[in-house]
Length: 264
Image 1 (cartoon, rainbow, N blue to C red):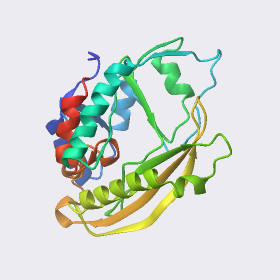
Image 2: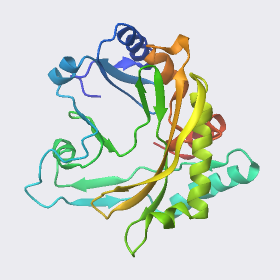
Image 3: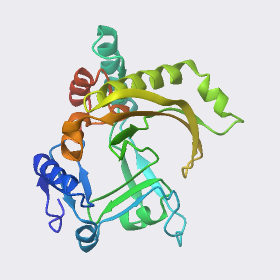
């Protein structure tokens, strides 16, 4: 880990998040997928550490002086299908309805992570210097005036070949995936809020990537925070992480399958 970042345990991050939330102090934080470690601090503390972030801009901070090169080396086809078949067997056993299977891909590039962060065009971006950068079009949760919202994004179709949003909306497979995740997120939010409602079901965004644009399907789910969770953002995250759209359903058994099959 980057020695300049004062890493904390997940529990420490959540405890400080509760404290700062109750006192209405702004903060920046990040935690890992397995909820083992992370960091939290004020915006000024983040700036002092060189941590950069953007929320909602969807515009690149800079243009690349040279053409970005990304030479990818994914896992072998045999290795992938070995994992894929394990996932299929788990689904056939009834252990999961939907599994988000991923694999590490080695990338050789002519750009630093700082440069990748700068030119990336995404609604949500984060740079932890000398460690990682991440960018995403998806908003996991948003809390305002004690109302929590989630925007699960599941369902993808390439814009190429004259496809339209209607093609994605009417795709049987993508619809099944989306409905499953919406149901999961609705159940997850019910742990911290009531009543829960699906305010908007299946709306389409066009997401730009360096390999071509994509149609992405999302929904909006909301609820009023229960009294015990108001201002307690750490307690909320403890209940909700990891996000359903990057894991699967049902979450507990699916996370166990992912942990066994993936080899990060």
